[in-house]
Length: 78
Image 1 (cartoon, rainbow, N blue to C red):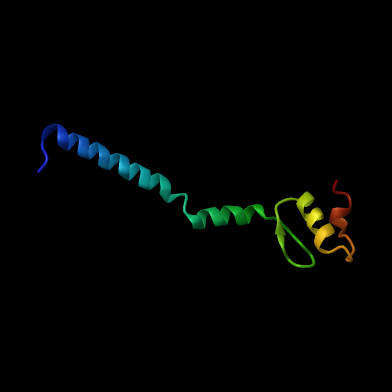
Image 2 (spheres, rainbow, N blue to C red; image 1 turned 30 degrees about the horizontal axis):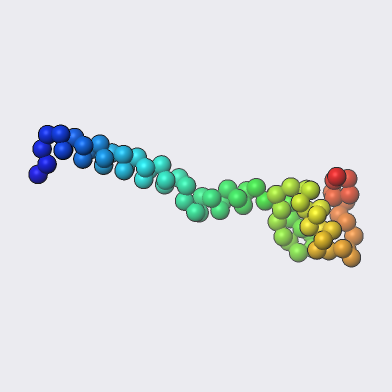
């Protein structure tokens, strides 16, 4: 068994390790995917692809669906 100074060092090291594990728990891949999904608010009317903002949506629509009519919500986007 460890005694004295070695015991204190071991306890501090274990506490640091536990703190790091607890901090990383909130940053799992599943949580990151959920957060990214919340940011994708615009959905293409033709292909149902998701975009984060109207400017990206307009660029997508112009490039991927040039023959289709532009949706009303995108006509005034710069």
